[in-house]
Amino acid sequence: MNKEIFRIAIPNIISNITVPLMGLVSTGIVGSNSGSAEVIGALALGVSIFNFIYWNCSFIRMGTSGLTAQAYGAGDFHETTAMLARAVVISLILSAIVLIFQQSLGKLSLWLMGGDEIVADYFFARIWAVPAGILLFGLYGWFVGMQNGVIPMAVSITVNSLHVLFGWWFVNSFDMGIVGIAYASVVSQWIGLLLATTLLIIFFRKTMQKIVLREVLDLSAMKRFFKVNGDIIVRTFCNVGVYTFFTAASAKMGEGGSCDAAILAVNTTLMQLLMLFSYMNDGFAYAAEAMTGRFIGAKDLTSLKRCLRYCVIWTFATAVIAISLYLAGWEWLFTSFLGDSAEQEIATVLAVAKEYIGWIVVIPLFAALPFMLDGVYAGATLTRAMRNSMLWATIIFFVAFYSLRPLIGNDALWFAFLLYIIFRLVLQYFMADRLRDVYRQVEKIA
Image: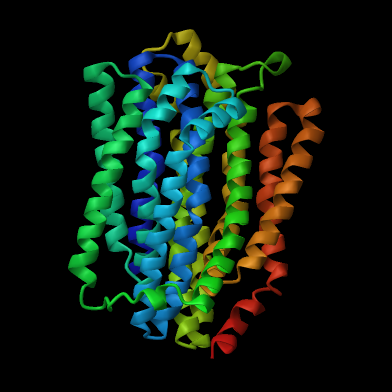
């Protein structure tokens, strides 16, 4: 069982951690070139806007993965092929909507995040990467549902490596600033989509069935697809809303609600470190998602329980590793990001970071399980529990933040985030009848 878990988890961990590492390296490229905490903050705002867009489209990955895994476990390759077609169609529709309304979306995002002209230039350059990014979500979900973590790993490593290379080239050779990072994303995402499509044809041509439009648009199948994805959209919107608000609130932590560049740089960098952990942890969440769906489709309750037990163990092990890395390298990380900044500015940022570093030591311990349970529930298509637990946790986050901000300032933001994580875990667990609803899915599918 552990071998099966690691066969899916390890490639996904490798591919996942390239995402925040790409963000950290991009921040380092811009920071070294500009030597300014203000520019780092501008990049953070721009990235947060696209995180909001991408994460709200990530339901395609989660919904596709769980349903595909159940069809795979049942040996129904006609349905796995139909799921791929549905994912591509929905991805194309979403991409068209984003591009058509890019002006309105950009203006609204900049207003909500308080972005300036530099952030605007970044947004309208990177927006052309969105169609490729959304289509990759659908393909990644399908690959994981088909129990293949290697192809998403290969594509992710390629995309993020190219992003760093093109970003360094555009920033340093053409002095394009954060706009160079945006165009690097455009180039790398489209190359990644071409690679993913090529690998799909090469490795899955034997299992692919003839695409029949009637089966793809089957009313009952589409109803189930949109029901699962509808719950995931609400869940994801709440999740992204919290993370995006975190960055926006960080930009207003100065005196009188002004921007304190040091606090913004520290909060966004620490959040990137936390995201690094979440991406590591998501490797086991993906394994849990793929294997939960597979064992439910195969009606194998014994293997399902063993799988979840081992996923819990490895999830906590990942948290311990992440915390150790944070404690060992946080000071070096901040110093590297600030590059050639003045010693006084470096000292100021390090002093601020020291005040808040404890939060990313505590949070992973509580975040380990809810991240993994998201995968379990997606694989079991118990999306209602995911949705409702996230809704209540989000409400608790905002109530806690606005209640405590006048008393403890920036610590209120971190404490509210910790409560958000804790309540996600508690509510997830009990809303699924202490995981019994997951096990009942085997009987329901049967």
